[in-house]
Length: 331
Ligand code: AKB
Image (cartoon, rainbow, N blue to C red; front, side, top):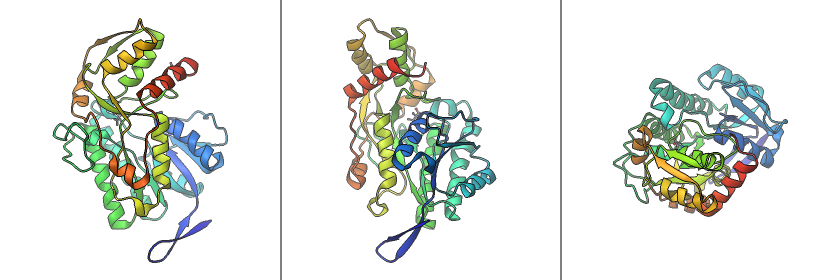
């Protein structure tokens, strides 16, 4: 089936196919699939992951095994399932990438190029690809970091995300590939564990507080980082994918902001709920990564272009995290 849309010049035909979420077992993937299934119907979603995937909650979603570096299999899945939209979430995050330089580069970069190429060849109509605050580096402004500024990341992950952004814009301008992207801050969630990031401390601290009453933080007390609650991050993702392309003035990746805090501030909030909670600090290599990232982000382009507005402030995020972990969170 095709949808006929009119832009300023002519009619364009959009193929209406299914949505493929790659990296479906990851922290974002698990929750994005739930939302997409709710919005579009579970039979419209195909979930792919390199791990032989356990059936998710939603049994109507079809799960397939896929290594994003295997372009042939990727194309086969796209054709077989009539895929028109891809959410490419498979990536190696900042901390783990420092220990697997080559693999991180290959996965983060070649995976994206495989998808961009298939969109250029018209097998896919639309792509979502996450970037990160990791594109910023020690020379970027720390406070209210602007959309366009000096980008000199000094991590493998940051270099791959910065390069990925350049490729996204290139494929859009040169080949008309409709790729949309957000520079995610740290994402706080409890349904599925994060894997190998620097901002993971802000999730670990909740589990530690609830299960042990104690947390030894690998980020030092005064290092403030931008964060967002998962529900907001998922909504931002679905909103940018639904936005009218002609309203999008950023063709690389949008700054996205919600809340910012440091370990001391989050520990103090947690102590209001668990007065016995204790925190100590043993900063490791991840602290250096955190120090190279912004503390607060200017996301006015996202707010102006497609109406982004976060809903979860710090207090609301904390309540959701604590209740979520107590009731059902991973251990
Ligand atoms: C990480 O810490 O590596 C990620 C990110 C900010 O992209 N959560």
